[in-house]
Length: 195
Image 1 (tube, rainbow, N blue to C red):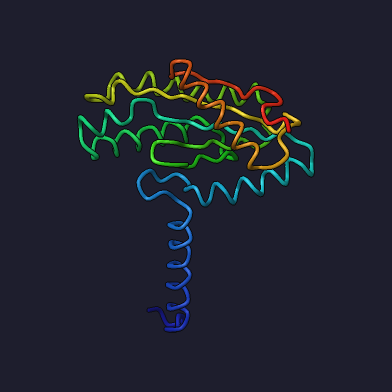
Image 2: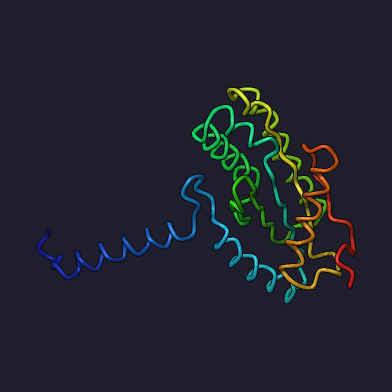
């Protein structure tokens, strides 16, 4: 302790540091280090409201790791954890600083892309898919067989009236990618949620 620092100042600094760490832990996925689903949901609501108010596009890529169960089954959960960490790193490196990468579920991720037209979101999804394709050649065992299926949706689709609609459209596109053979990027059909 220096002569100018009182015990109260030190305690306040320590408390602020602990609060910052706690906030960071509450927002990030413990395994992968990317944002967690709760933080994604908060950011999605905020970005959706901004996109609607200022009339700029907001795109979403939902990403599923194909054949992930085989990694866990053959190499154990440790191998699966390592594969998820590697994939999260690739996804985070495939987006801009203003974009959001989050772990959406067990082996699913979400890429939220503010101010991004759907055609540019497709490029982001394809970039991430291709990076995993190149990286998996160096991964051991069943991890070398994983790929990414990506569903893309955008606020440019007038049938999407809420942030939940955006997620639902991207999710439907993701399942179309899986049904079409996996390892591909599929865009949600315009008007997919017509009422």
